[in-house]
Image (cartoon, rainbow, N blue to C red):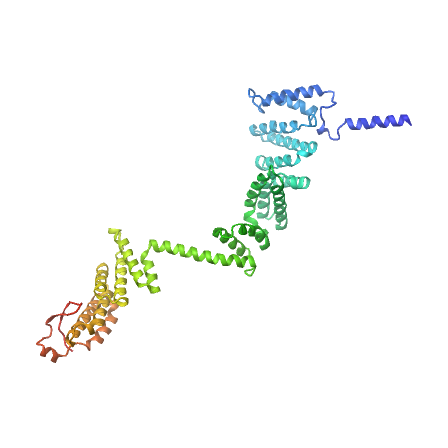
Length: 467
């Protein structure tokens, strides 16, 4: 019985003295411990010395290789042999031209990553993150291989998985989904898992929480092009409502969220969508008004037209004058047609809305000056004369002379502008009945064709004509 016990104890001692995995051997208890520690000390001194070339040092590499081969896991407390080995081989990878050798270096680097994780499991999150980083950015590894590493990192480390995997995984998902290599359920699942890891660490990791947040924002920016395809309305509501509640008066944010939810097909009757629409409509109205005011500032003539339609004739007149001054300031580049239109509009306001005849006629004449062969200004002056004829003088003869002045303006308008010919002819025919009788002319010793000055404000000279 004593012999069996002794044999068992020897067997147990042997089991504990030999590491389960050879890559996790340490120099503790090794017959080559001194050689390993010496090589370790030498190469570490070289890579950290300013006088040497760091990891671009073949002598240091040889010493590292000796230390690594004897004790891959060093003393079991420090993972330098794995991390330093990767740096040596990464330098070789970056400076090597031969593709076959570069491939060998990549395989060695990935092997050292795997051994590092196996032998120092507590460092797994950071190491798997760095492995994914190198595979994605430096080695351009196939996405299928990269996905295995990142899935393993999430499975092994859970919420402790490194934020470094966020961007590579997001890029992989977007590429695969866009190219029909991944379905929306898988893409959505990855998005959810990564964001859960991020949220956990933002809330609980005081040291690296801000890094997780930054990586999460970048990752979700990468996911953005496929979000509309892989998520439904509820996802966007849950994602965007907190932003809205935090800044409920941020008009740009309201517009952005409302447009996003409606584009995603959210029900208009949804309480959040309905609330946003109310504010969005106010926003649109304000924005349209702002743009309109900017347009009016650039084009006061357009503003004047709007004011005229609204019945604000006084302000409309001031805006037309402003528009006229703006055009005149352009000098040789002024638009004469616009000047004519503005003056004519002023003439209409002064005559038809404010009954200021003299000023109305002045504006009409200026309108005619800027647009030759335009009959409308003279038609308007004719209307002024006709409308004021009944109050022009005390006797009927004076009133009839005012009518002749009106007929003269209609006739002139018809002679220069065919577009007003029909209207002018109708008015000439209508007012012809108001010409003086020949008998009245005889009584006043007036002959056909004799020149007579019209009284009141008109003050023009007309040729006497009879019915």
